[in-house]
Image (cartoon, rainbow, N blue to C red; front, side):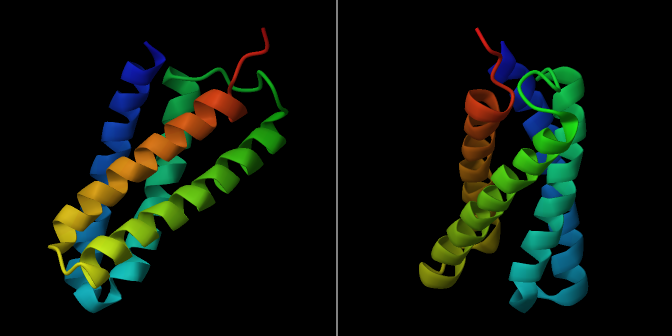
Length: 126
C-alpha cells in the first residue's frame, strides 16, 4: 500500500506544484515557464519529503538523516531535470498547451521520484 500512500502525498505535492506554477506564470508570464516550473517543483519537493517520511517511508532505515536528505535532493534534482525536459519537449518543441505539458511532466517526475525513493533511498534492508 506504499504506492497508494505515495499517490496521496504526490497528489498533495502536485497540487502545490500546479498552484505555485500557475501563480508564477500569472506573475512573470509564460515566457518564463522554466523559472516558474523550477521554483514550483522545488517547493513541492520539499513538501513531498516532509510528508513522505511521515506517511509513506521510514526515515533513517538505510542512511543517516543527513545522507538521506542529500539523496532525496539528488533524486529530486534528477526529477527536476525530467520535469523540465518533459515540459520543454511537449510545450516548446511539440507546441502543446502548457498545462498538458505540465501534467505529463508531473506524471513522469512522479514515477521517477517514487521509484528512486522506494527502490533505493528508503528501501528497507531485508
